[in-house]
Amino acid sequence: MIYPKQTTTRSLFDLNGIWDFSRELDAGDYTQGFKAEKQVAVPSSYNDLYTEEVFRTWDKGVWYTRSFTMPRLLREERIVLRFASASYRAAVYLNGVRLGDHETGYTPFEFDITDCVSFDQENRLCVRLDNLLSAETIPMGNLQNQPEPGQFAGQYPDTPFDFFPYGGIQRPVSIYTTSKVAWLESVVVETLVNGADAEVKLAGTLGGTAAKVVIECEETGTRTEAEIAGDRFSGAFAVSDARLWDVKQPELYHARIQILDASGALLDEYTQRFGIRTVEVTKNRVLLNGKPVYLQGFGRHEDFPVIGKGLNHSVNIRDHEILHWIHANSYRTTHYPYSEELIQLADEQGLLIIGETPAVSINFDYVNQNTLKNHKQVLAELIERDRNNPSVIMWSVANEATTDREVAVSYFKELSELARSMDATRPITMVTCKAEKDLVMDFFDVVSVNLYPGWYHLPGQVAEAKEDLRDTLEKMHNAFQKPILITEFGADTIAGLHSLPAEQWSEEYQTELVMGLIEVMRDLDYVVGEHLWNFADFRTAQNFARVGGNKKGVFTRERQPKMLAHFLKKMWATPRYTSELSCTED
Ligand code: BDP
Image 1 (cartoon, rainbow, N blue to C red):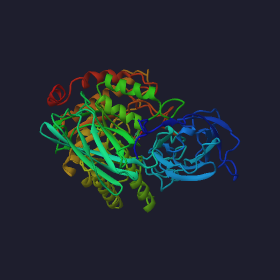
Image 2: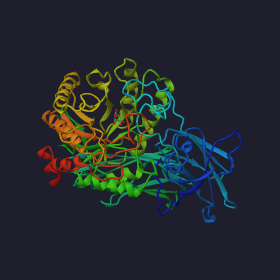
Image 3: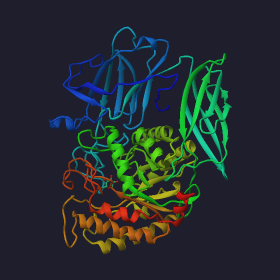
């Protein structure tokens, strides 16, 4: 699947805006339309739009509907309906016909509606969603509030993770058209750097019957004819004096793919953007284009007042703006794939992304074959979606699974093999909370770890927390002999709460603890980065340990800095490795 675009051969229009909405309150037929309870915005989470509690935590069936008309001039085209995501489980009906289903909430899916869309009358689109998490869903939920200690027991709604389980059509819905004769289905761009030059390989799949595929590189002017074998095509071209993509100079290239018929007439045209860069991991460094880069940044959430996890371009722009202001160079898409538009912004603005699946808090007391099946599917969908984005430098297969149990070993072996078989160009990681007791780190290139000394243990004791951190990291390094990325550490902090001496929840404590822990990390050569938890405060499920959400943000939920932000900005202004300076000055 490719990102939907308007091109010289493709039309694109969106179905965003106001839809009708109802909870599924009875066994009646909702597939051809229904009496609306409410109106709803697309894209948006529905949970925080209304005033009644019952809508906020409703995870059973909900229905979305709207109508649309198709312009007759598109009658001869192939028509595709695309959802960038729908949380968690979707069933889609067009004019009463079930088009199909999708499970997991953060990856795109689409349906060819050429045969059931009408050009003579209004079309009725109905979508059933439910957000019922279980032992088999990714992420898990409704474990009878018995996740293991530390996995947020006793919350409402009942999830083993703390962020609010928002639901709804949270990303755009669109219709795009292609020729019926032949079209581009998918494309993978891989680049190989040889000295100053690069080789660019494109491979993909075609729909319909194409006679010829031509690939043109806009920047170099190269034009090559691809080979076609069945529904697959492949081609390659060279770029001399390649301009490498990096954080300060995010150079992008464009491959125009043209699909022609036997007479040479253009059937489909699509431009795929890509970057040329390498990522490698050595025993104590992450290398971008052969030069060490220390990852400084955050774990975060797609989360904002009212819209929940709904795509909002203004919030995306603001987030990247303040990431640059504070001199962050990277973030992890905790704990699920973020919008395609945000990853594209990272490509354009030079931020390094660790792309994570929605597998947060997998608990092996509950895992079964379906959990693994769904986990594999969503990992594959993430890699397929974001593999052409140069900003994505690593895949994170999961966050905080109970990986201190033997049963976790074969499970993560399979997942790591899947990731490597799909993408040999990026390192992979898995984020542990089991420190040196983790049993699955053999399968991963970078050891990522979440550690909360000074918060969940050793509260209020910064000096002891620093010693504890050093001790844990040394044990982990002895056990795994791999580079370690600290993917989470921090302290809940109420903006505006001050205390001298520093005490938990105050801005002084967050600053003192975080800066102290970073001092330890920077003293250990095998630590390859510091990602704070969290970029901004975010909404959580209800729980006695959360006051109006998770407050570990360095920024408030409204994206204003807490005191710590100014200290980080000062420290992060100077790259950790001197070679990073040359990396950006080349
Ligand atoms: C970690 C989780 C993260 C939580 C964080 C916290 O990975 O999702 O929000 O703890 O407790 O365990 O703040």
